Length: 271
Image (cartoon, rainbow, N blue to C red; front, side, top):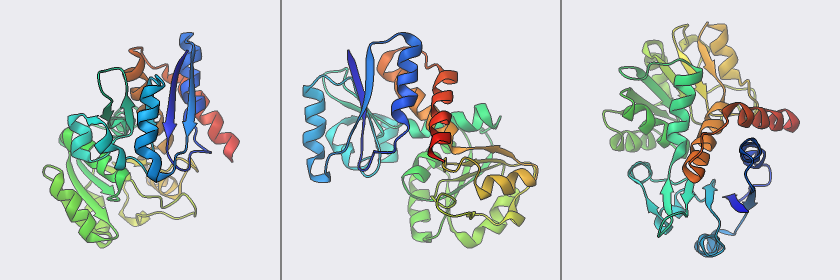
C-alpha cells in the first residue's frame, strides 16, 4: 500500500484526505492519504521519518511551507516563491515543489476562461498564497500589481516578481478598474461577511478568483457577480493544486470530476 499525506499544524479539518482518496478509488489504487501534525521543533525529524517509512509523498501546509524549504531539494519555482507545498520522495533525496502557483493559474484559465498572457492582474495579499499567485501570473505573461495592507510587504514581494509593482490598499480604486484579473489571496471573507475590495472598483470584464474556499461564496464573489464579472471560488484552486500533486506522485491523470465532488461534499458537510 502506498501512503501519502499532509503535514501541518493544525490539520484536523483538512479536506485533502477525501479529495485524494477519491482519486485513489477512481484509479483502483491501494493507497491512503493521512494527516500528520508535528510540533514545529520536530519538523525535520518528521520529514526524515516520512522518508524512512517509505511514504510516497507529502503535502505541506501552514505553518511549514517556508520551513520545509531547507529540508528538501526545491525545484526552480518553489525556490523562487520561497515555499514548498508538495514533497516527492521518489528520487534519491526528497524534492520540494509548489503546486499552489499552477493551481491558481489552472483555476483562472479553466474555470474563469482567463487569458493571462498580456493581462493586467491585481493580487490582494503578500503572504504565502499571494506569493504563489503573483509568480504564477507573472510567469503566464501578466503584469502584476501586488496590493497589501502593509505596503512594505507588497513592494518586497513585487521586487521578487518580474515586472510587478507593490501598493497599499488605497491603490485598489485606481488599479482594479483597469485590471483584467483580480485575486484575493488574503483571509478576508473567511470569518466575516467582508470583502478586501470596494464593490465600486469592480467591473464586468474582470475574472475574480477568491482563494478563500469556506464559505464558497464570499462577499467579494457576490459583489463581483453583481457587476457581471466572471467568478472563480477558492475550492478550484485547492482542487487543482491537489490534482497537480497527485499527478506528480503517481504519474496518473488526476480524476478532476471525482476529486471535485469529494472536495465539495466535504465543504458542504462543514457548513
